Length: 255
Ligand SMILES: NC(=O)c1ccc[n+]([C@@H]2O[C@H](COP(=O)([O-])OP(=O)(O)OC[C@H]3O[C@@H](n4cnc5c(N)ncnc54)[C@H](O)[C@@H]3O)[C@@H](O)[C@H]2O)c1
Image 1 (cartoon, rainbow, N blue to C red):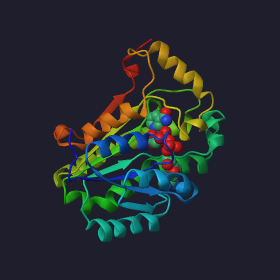
Image 2: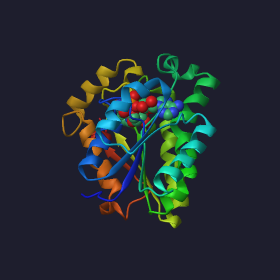
Image 3: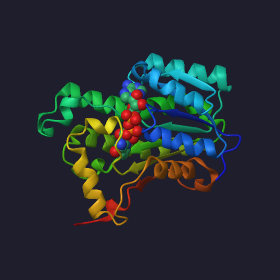
Image 4: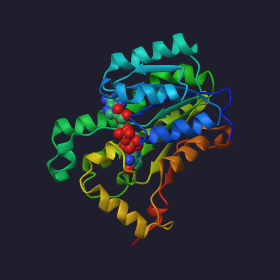
């Protein structure tokens, strides 16, 4: 699959374990030009990786701040002439304590934070960058998880946020389709990343997949990268509003 002549903005690269890194590698190999956003706490770690990938744009964007999202839109206007092809939203956040105690005791603030950063941000960023995506009939890709559909122990408020993210994917797809912009989500199986380290007893989730998923293995960031490449490319031109599972088939199992 070819992304030559296409530009991709990737939000959520933290380190070489990040799903965003798997996606960036696949896009780079397919010939895309890359740009990245970061939050201050991880800039030092991600900048050399982004530079190694030949990024032509590396810019801050904390999605909890409206002014950062506006600035991102201005940067795209200045540096990329307000035109790019692929937006990857690969970020999420919940307070650690909300992933440790029972879901029933989630605080109002913890609930709002998780939903704001992990779900609303997709809406806000898509809206801000829509003119630039519309110019190229672009593709938006976000990352979800099975905890949106079924109860996964300790995933808690993040499962609720992912449910909102998946519904937002469908509503965004409906709005953006007339403008030629597609919006899809990849529901990835569990992968040991920085974000995943916040989920208590994550190891047991990985073990469960190895024994119960049809493919009997956990997925890799490279697996997700290849599916993102498909969703970014013209090969998927008829697909929008879809939640595509990249999970070794785990989601189809009943018992
Ligand atoms: N690792 C898994 O098992 C798994 C499975 C399915 C889906 N996902 C999803 O994949 C996405 C990427 O996560 P990952 O596992 O690669 O972990 P990661 O820790 O590598 O990436 C998470 C990113 O979110 C960013 N982020 C957090 N708060 C932010 C904010 N306020 N503004 C902007 N960025 C912010 C972090 O800087 C980081 O780059 C997330 O949406 C996650 O929920 C992960």
